[in-house]
Amino acid sequence: MANPASRTRDSHNEPAPGAAYRPASLLRRIVKRLFAAALGVCFGFLLLEVGLRLFVPITDADYQFWDPVLGARRLPDQTGRYIRPSGANAPFIFN
Image 1 (cartoon, rainbow, N blue to C red):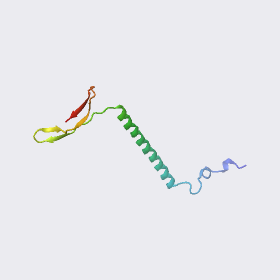
Image 2 (image 1 turned 90 degrees about the vertical axis):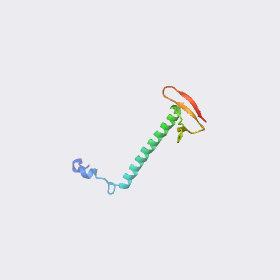
Image 3 (image 1 turned 30 degrees about the vertical axis):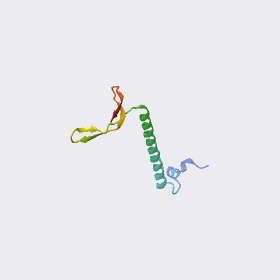
Image 4 (image 1 turned 180 degrees about the vertical axis):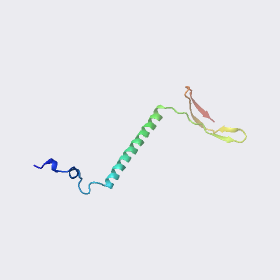
């Protein structure tokens, strides 16, 4: 049986030849981790979008244009919902 004290620490922990530094595998691992992080962020944004569309009501925008004689005017043929935090929730129709 070999004496454990006869082995040096450096020779015992020395990696196999060619296994010490592999930039291709390091790059591949980094790319995989970045892809997983990007996929997680995209999935989070997708869940946020679905949740907001289902549970948070939003008001529709009424579009306007500038009339040189009358000033700001609303475009015709618009319908939507007018929602305010104070509790107002009503449909609007501009002809």
